[in-house]
Length: 284
Image (cartoon, rainbow, N blue to C red; front, side, top):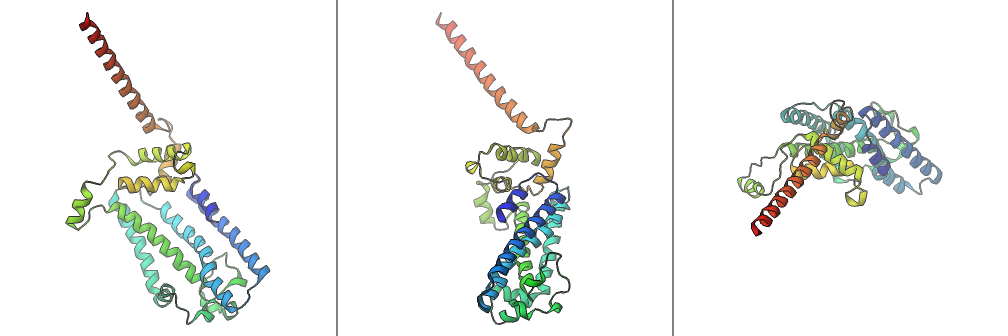
């Protein structure tokens, strides 16, 4: 399932189409998992609890993660870094409020407690009152009181990590003077437009020049972000703009790079030829 989701992630489909593909993909593999469990059954309560507490939530978490993160990325403002930063901080606040509203259960999740595992994760103990509203994909035969809650915690923690990483790329001025001094000589920054880096990223991806050709676009984007301390969270949207170009080349910056290299080599060769000619004349 994760491999299939990665293929969707690297596609050039629109956000809306990606979301449909994400959710269909998770539903497909959830159905396979549920069918397997229905065929095999559980040996005992301990095995059922383990499944609903640790395995099933990981699959459902993928559904929640993509269902909630994709709209956030789609709505990412196109503007200054401050606008993007405020937007991410706002989304982070929503996640924190969700954790606080479910503090007892979230602490149970974090502590990996087991005192209430039987009422929480055995299907026979399920109560409809446990969920105010069930997601459309929920299978009644696999409902327990807290398995979906654990799935949401996993998804929201993953979203939180994603957003925090984006914020770190936007906040590049450490408060610690000593740390700032250490980092000063090691930092690399990009002085051009982000669209130029996106051309490079997709150029590397489509020519399969990284990690034996196995690197995903997201891996390449992350490498460029870490190396150049820049937020490329709008990479996919920018690439869509590149594909829609009509008045300029699809690879404007790569063309500029190629022309600059060719010009430099040609000028260097002319300089060398002139020096040879001068030396030859001096010899006579």
